[in-house]
Length: 128
Image (tube, rainbow, N blue to C red; front, side, top):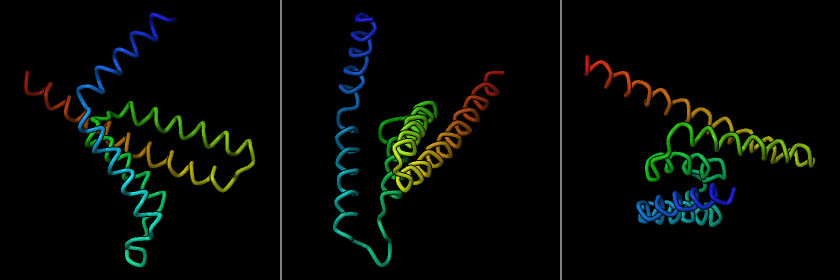
C-alpha cells in the first residue's frame, strides 16, 4: 500500500511540474471568478452565480489542465457522493444544487467523450 501511494505521489508531482503554469492560471481564474461573484460585478446583465463558476471551472479544466472525459466522470461521481451526503444530513437545498453540478459534469464529460471517440475513429480511418 505504501509503495502504491509513493508511486501515485511521484506521478502527481511529475504532472504538477509539467503543468505548473497552467495550474497557476487555472487557480487564478477560479479565484477571480469567485471574487467577481462575491463583489456582484456584471450583476444586472450577467449574474455570476456559483453554478456559472462551477461550469466555467469544468470547462477551464478541460482547456487548461487537459482533463479527459474519465476525469470529468470522476468529478461528477464526487459531486454525486457529496450531494448524497448533503441529502442524508438534511441540507436539501445544497443537495439539489450539487445535483445540478453532477448533471453539468456528466454532460460535459459525455460531449468530451464523443469528441475523443470521433478523434480516434478519424485516426483509425486514416491508417487504413
